[in-house]
Image 1: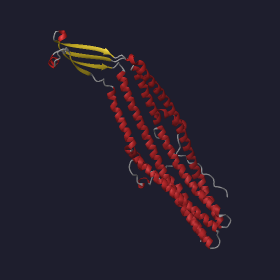
Image 2: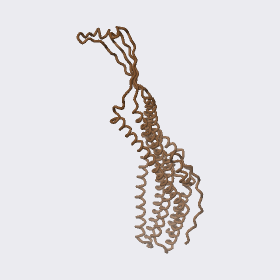
Image 3: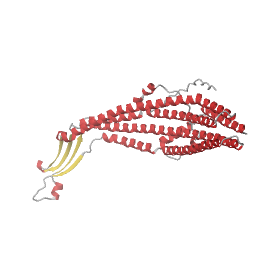
Image 4: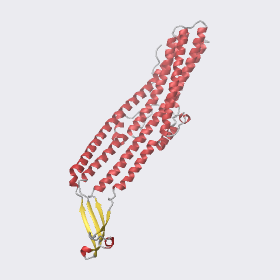
Length: 439
């Protein structure tokens, strides 16, 4: 009976290894994944709010290029102070005038350019937010898929430990076992059950995050088929970094802000120049001119030098400081995204290597080590502690392999968010199988 139970345990372990190796052949649920991405990009409230800001900014462009409102006035002239009369005011010496302000040449063009630059900045922020939402959604999907895999491994661990507990109880009942072995097996099983609760809680948190991003409840059935693809070969870091300046959403936002700041600086310089005023007036029954009707024209200009020190010069200094800050922000953004890309790249490279180490070496070696310890224990040469230890190692390595696989894809998604475009991935080169451990 004891040997039969250990045979069952060996079969469970063998099934776990086969499931892990077969996982590479299961197709990734690309359709479900892309569907959720599109729904998030369409329905996420933050993106909707930013699209409204873009539309609002677009409405400011024609306003910025419009002329100031003309001014009109009605003038009553020659009203006697000694004998004021409403009739005389309405019938004698009345004039109507219109005045239009004409900004100095170039001012309107700068105002329109500043409005266009604001539109570009809002559009850049929208693209940045879309990349962020996409990256967060895909990362959460891979976290959820990893949780499913870890729950599967946890269940297999519990199944194996249940067999171990039953075996130790049977052995102890037959008078051949040790009560400490029973307690050790039961403790390991209880620990696995506690870990299962933590994993399920993490799954619900990931599901809630997905629902928040998509702006609707996400059912577990929708994403039950999602899994992280196997790690692939990445382009070189230098190749990825070469496009950062032109494609990174963070850098493009900083550049758009810098362009807007530069235009505002030019507008602040142009404010030192005067605006012109042109007008016309119709004078009816002008008593000063013998009671006839006349037309008059007028020209004038503003005098900005009166407020040069307290208005226009401080405004220019403010614009210059803002332009300097925006320019430095571009360099800061470049530095930050290069660091973030390098960090994500190194972590992805590590995860890919670790996945190979686990699947091609440690998992196979751990399976053989556990099988050897199981055989030795059944023959009375090994210890139960070694059996439990090698079993724990086997499932720990399987979980670590699944984690490396999921985290690789999370890093790829993060790099794509930093770069602003998909990364071309090449199929992984199959490494040579590692040798089996010597007994």
